[in-house]
Image (cartoon, rainbow, N blue to C red; front, side):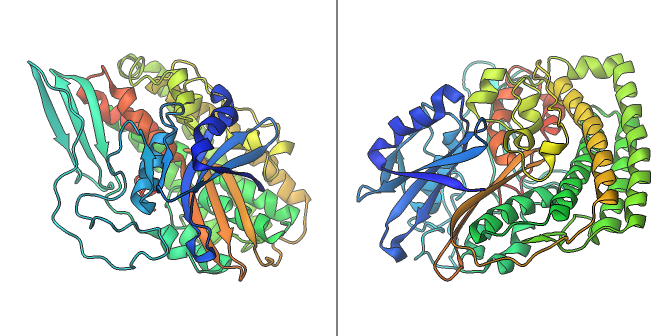
Amino acid sequence: MKLEIKEITAEALLSEAKVYNEGGKHPLTAMFGRDETNAEGGFAVYAVFEFPEEKVHRALKAKVGESMSFPSLSHLIPAASWFEREIQDMFGLKAENHPDPRPLVLHENFPKGIHPLRKDAPREVEFIEGKHTHMHTVSGEGTFQVPVGPIHAGIIEPGHFRFSQAGESMLQLDAKLFYTHRGLEKMMEGKTALEAHPIAERICGACTAANTWSYCQAVETAAGTTVPRRAEILRTFILEIERITNHVGDLGNIPAGVGFSFAVSIGTRAKEAMMRLQDELTGNRFLRGFIVPGGTAKDLAGSELAQAEEVLSEVEKNVLDLERIFAEQDSFQDRVRTTGIVRNKTARDLAMVGVGARASGYAHDSRADFGYGVYPELALKVVTETSGDVAARILVRIGELKESFRLAGKLLEMLKKEQGAHCTELGTPQGEAVGVSESARGSSFCYVAFDKEGLLDRIFVRSASYANWPALPIAVQGDIIPDFPLINKSFELCYACLDR
């Protein structure tokens, strides 16, 4: 997808962002920094907004002068908060008047004065013993704190949660994440689009197809490469397969938060069936190596399409079983209704994406908003609920699963009827472009900038989880701490997507 860029001064960023955002009508997709000192361009801050009515992204590119600062947008656009803190960490550019200027990505053991995404930053650093990052807490008579993590029971990634409690009620939650930052964006700089591809598809194991498709969209636009129609159908089909796999797994994970083991088993079994199907279709349980720049690495044979049809039919029965079981269990409904509420205004202020947004009545879905692949031919129905609680997030997933089964059926028919090439040669990428695709957790956004030799000068990835993590501390306020696992699982946010 092309990116329309307007260059402005840093001083004009706030007023121009207000015009672009138009009171939330055009959500802030991403903000990121770029070091252009090698081209004598200095530093720049990008703010990218969605204009779904025109199916386009527009960016404000603010040149940062000698002050090495820019005005914070967070007071005007709360969704900007994390992006600006990350820019401070990674580029050393100060967001003036930011309401919470604490470090975000770089923890207290990272040496001061080193900003990893600057071109002159060292590749290796020696970690230090630093003072612990201040956590926001509540104080007063009868209040106390409950620290959880960063190491957790079970096989999940690290994150520290600091609960401020009054009895069982959660008054406030502050989360410290980014424990295992991998430097993938830095690692991809200086590589060709094909060399960077295996890194881009390893950002996250759950959203491989979505992250990779976003990356491929961006590099194909920069290269002026048109993907064959069959590749577009195959990519759309695999993206829906990935959505079904994640959603059935999530439907099994959510009841684990209240010890509803019978439902957990049904969801786990269905997810395993889908992951085996993914392996059969693409050669990888995590769908790696299938979507490549220029198309897909392989076509799907008639026998593979037939197998997909059979597995999808069985998994659809599991989903209908779970829908009935959830509805019949009053004790389960009692736990999920009015628990973990995110209001519609909060979802819009934070520019939330995916199930988290749509469960709060915010119909934010990149498949409908930008119409990539063959989605415009499928009459996609965007599923929404309005209560914004755990129950709504379950209902949205069930509704989206039904829609994905319908879409997969139509795509299987298209693949049987339409033949043709599934890949074409990628041209030489030049300039800047973006890509976006809808993962099970929401839209995955990718920005790329290539130099004159066709090498990556900058890549920025904003996963769906990045957009939704700031909503979790808001959702838990006023609920009891035993409900935190339930609320947390209803969002099913990813740590690896942050630790890119």
